Amino acid sequence: MLESAIISVLQRGKLILVVRSETGGSSSLSATSVVNETSLRVTKMEIGDLPGVCEIEARAYQFPWKHAVFADCLGAGYSCHLIWDKKQLLGYSLVAVAAGEAHLLNLCIDPDRQGCGYAGWFLKVILRTTAELDALTVYLEVRPSNRAALALYRTFGFEQIGLRKNYYRAESRCEDAIVLSKNIASLKQWRHQLLAPESRPKCLDQVLVSPD
Ligand SMILES: CC(C)(COP(=O)(O)OP(=O)(O)OC[C@H]1O[C@@H](n2cnc3c(N)ncnc32)[C@H](O)[C@@H]1OP(=O)(O)O)[C@@H](O)C(=O)NCCC(=O)NCCS
View (cartoon, rainbow, N blue to C red):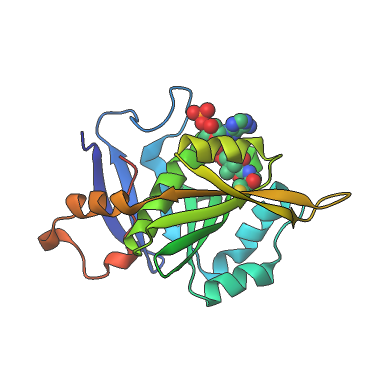
């Protein structure tokens, strides 16, 4: 059942999608999730957002990216988004898309807000937004020690396709990276069904879609 009403509004110069559940619950998140979908929104990341992003990054990772890395991603035109709970920044994602392939470079939720279902909600939005950019497959690397991320991606149907030896920096020696991939071609069709041609805004690439 389609349970989401899509309301796009311009706020602070950003096109925002608000997801409103008409059933009062969520068919897409686990029973233990405490996510209140009505207050969540996703916006495009802009350069002015980077202090907040870097603040979360520094607390979430042992070896955090520097401001310049995020700025380079924005400058390169990568698909970069933020997830908010009202005015509270919860996390962010960065995806590089080219030639039908997407690389999920970073997905992070504020450590103080983890374990509440936010990444699951956000990843659905990210995958559908990425599919709209004509990506057929999403690739990503994850540390074997990152149990939470591995569980998240496997829940979403990502499958291991390889192992990069000594890919990550680590405390004593380097850590391998598990390479995961997922086909997302079908997600684009979902979006087109949701937004009939006559109701699709011209700036379609800026509109984010909600989880169902
Ligand atoms: C990985 C990360 C994004 C998960 O965010 P989150 O908001 O806590 O995740 P959610 O609450 O939405 O959980 C979604 C699923 O992830 C898995 N998961 C999340 N936290 C977990 C944990 N501590 N242990 C095991 N599985 C976990 C579960 O499968 C969960 O589904 P379930 O609740 O139905 O069991 C978060 O831990 C994070 O930002 N980590 C630091 C950055 C990072 O490592 N990013 C990944 C880089 S590849």
